[in-house]
Amino acid sequence: LFFRNISGLLAATFRVTRRTLDEAHWDALVRDFIARHESHTPLFLEMPREFLAFLEQERDDPADPPFLAALAHYEWVSLALSIAEEDPDLAGVDRTADLLDGVPVVSPLAWLCGYHFPVHRIGPEFRPAGPGEQPTWLVVYRRLDDHIGFLELNAATARLFELARDNEAGRT
Image 1 (cartoon, rainbow, N blue to C red):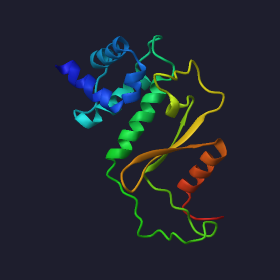
Image 2 (spheres, rainbow, N blue to C red; image 1 turned 135 degrees about the vertical axis):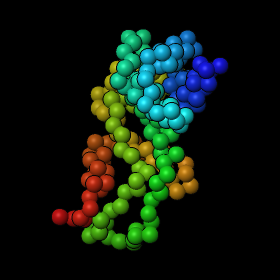
Image 3 (cartoon, helix red, strand yellow; image 1 turned 30 degrees about the vertical axis):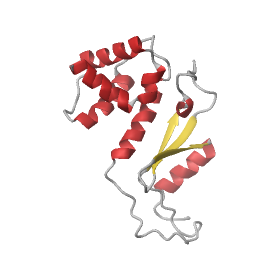
Image 4 (tube, rainbow, N blue to C red; image 1 turned 90 degrees about the vertical axis):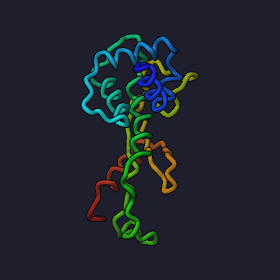
């Protein structure tokens, strides 16, 4: 019962990861998580973050696909954005302002993520054996209607996004 509850919760969060692994591999992964990972929170909604920490810091199984932690991170970002309590403050946003003279405002619910694998394309039919030639840059975001989306960026656009996100002074 305990195993099935944890496995079900993780499978609901990491849907693509679950579908990409065969059942025996998924079950072994969840059992390893339960047996070896010392969780730092008792909160049920934090379990996916604990699983991600396990994959990133503790799991080292050569049978795992090389993209496992990156794919799990991408899926966790979607969950984190969907439950984030923060909302964009649109009161001070002038939608007709000159972007060159004003300070562009980036939503706090738009996260820039960089991966060595094209995580947004991975699934049962596409399982890359190694990292791509170039990093994959994605902005994962939550729209005002609470739907989660993503944009694939190139390196230059990712840098522009970072500059806009971190800019508080406007043009210098």
